[in-house]
Length: 234
Image 1: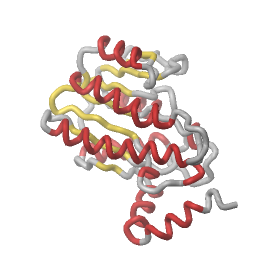
Image 2: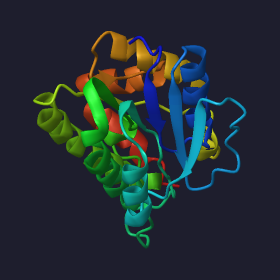
Image 3: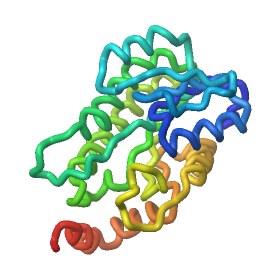
Image 4: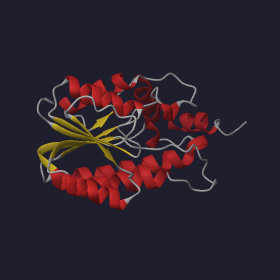
């Protein structure tokens, strides 16, 4: 995808992956970036192409205000998310409210603003395909998001909007700081995302970890489930 003169909107723009998206888009000569986050004080707006916007995905007023404040965009990057690391019987936190319903609500509000042949890029997780019980609520919210994005892809295919979904493994950001695993850098992930978009790969596995998990799911899913179950069997 040629990003030159494109208008991009990024949610979760204040995090490590969001910042990598901003850097990549600026390097590739976008026209404008709407940088949305609950806390925008960490968004460096030194470049005139950056417009920080306060956005809480669980707040419909914020979403409505965002919708009314922009004219059109070429690319929506759904990057905002949370991981409260809650097991399945623990009190429900806001994983579903942010990851699932928040992303759905922002897509519903903004898809009419996306230009013809524009794109939605949603950052999911390879854990959408296999639940890691130590963070079961997060995984379940991402599984539900995957189903939702499949439906959105079907709905918007008739409107010439491409819908991409990204399933990374651990990324070296604040969200995965407690996870002991090899982690890809945010910028590496972003580069692979746009490689996938360029190739019209609608489900993108951008790192070795995610590729290995999907391969194991195809070859030996029962073994992978047993290994993941060990996260709570101590």
